[in-house]
Length: 141
Image (tube, rainbow, N blue to C red; front, side, top):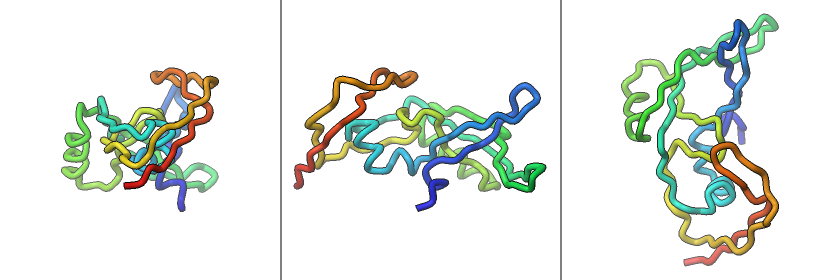
């Protein structure tokens, strides 16, 4: 699988320089591992969805990169997808910089149950403590 399907590094102007930022795509949030570890298999309704537009450019070293030209925040995923559909260019993506905050709705995973979560973890911005280890059990139909 191509990692660009799940996330990419984009560049944004900042203080007369281009600043790299890793942005996660909807496919990342929809993957089974992320739905389990990041969201405990629970349903997710996004609080907002961010849409970026970008241009594909070449660096001075002749390396391609994606330059963010605009970012808009929509209150719902549906409004974000409608906005993208109304554009002529295909250089629009729904993204988020935080891997623990989904910009896309996710249904609950019905056949998995969290059976262990470690007490030690890592503080994640805007999320809180995320356990280092989680173990899920597949409970079938």
